[in-house]
Amino acid sequence: MSRRKNEKICIFTGSRAEYGLLRWVMQGIKDAPELALQVVATGMHLSPEFGMTIHEIRADGFEPDETIEILLSGDTPAAICKSMGLAMIGYGEALQRLKPDMVLLLGDRFETFCMAAAAQVCRVPLAHIHGGETTEGAIDEAFRHSITKMSHLHFASCEEYRQRIIQLGEDPERVFNVGALGVENIRRVSLMERSELAESIGFNLERPYFLVTFHPVTLEKSTSEGQFQSLLNALDAFPEYNVIFTKTNADTDGRIINRLIDEYAEKRPERCLAATSLGAHRYLSAMKYASAVIGNSSSGIIEAPSSRVPTVNIGDRQKGRVRAESVVDCEPAAISIASSIRKAISIEFQSLLKVVKNPYEQTGTAARIVEKITLFCPGELMKKSFYNVRVSA
Image (tube, rainbow, N blue to C red; front, side, top):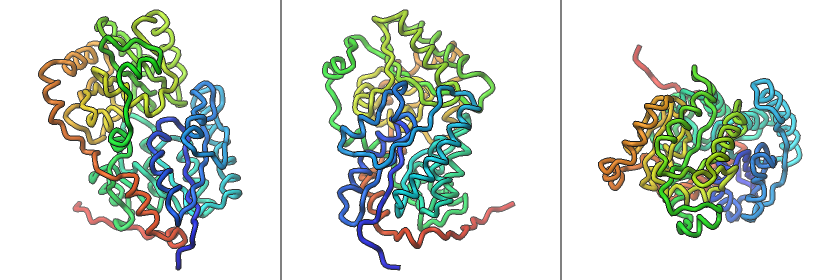
């Protein structure tokens, strides 16, 4: 089948973090003469509560072709299920209007899963970024592998994940190890000076500080609230350090964590900043100057090592992910967290950071994704054969 000109590649984005990773891929597709960019913005991008980050997309020169509201005011499991129902309806209708030749999506959030399912029903080929990873402490694990099975091109962030995608039955000729877009962002973006960042966020950065991001834990025995309270108790042991909190996503119990952040920061206004959304530029700049990245976000696993910043990774949310030696894992208990922070900021550990290797770091990640997309004809991708991997009993 011959390739048509101006094939429409629809980029799907539902969160600030996801868009920050996709930005250079979007620009690459926009600049490619044989491709035409479409953008679907949804989820937290359209919510004032989560920073109305659709403005960031537009400020970067990308006008969404579709904006689809799906979030409810609640974040209980029932509310998330209702949001997923709204998403399936809205995404299906959008795909019928846009008629893309391919949908490109990233990650494992519930709204991403819904777009993958809608595209499958509408017979639109899918390209998926960051498949093959494991996060044993989050329900995203199931969403991610389900998206893999619905996808037709795969862009893994390291070789171990590429092999896992193949293990799931995907054709090796359609699975590529391209590295992580977040690491490439660090190399491509001109980060702010410390004084410039302080002025931009309205917070004094003369003192050392921690960058804290903690997302709900959906598959662990202890509650998100209990784990986060343990983190706050641990932070009290380091009064000489300021704290920049970035608030959580629209996940189950996310609003509980955000409330605790606000309460903690309001009592310590000189020491703490609670940011709804820093955006990729300010977030990576804040990471650069932080004494440690603390929490359970993937950014501490993937991006922080390339910034030569230690990570204190709490609990099992990121369990199973490949990690650099700069990551200190700990239990979600105040004593364990405080002990790990002390280790991360120690002189001995700081010397390790100078030589640490990031397993997610490669060159030209975004360009390679765009290049691979241009090599495949979407019309020939829909039918897949299961690739059998021989295993010994």
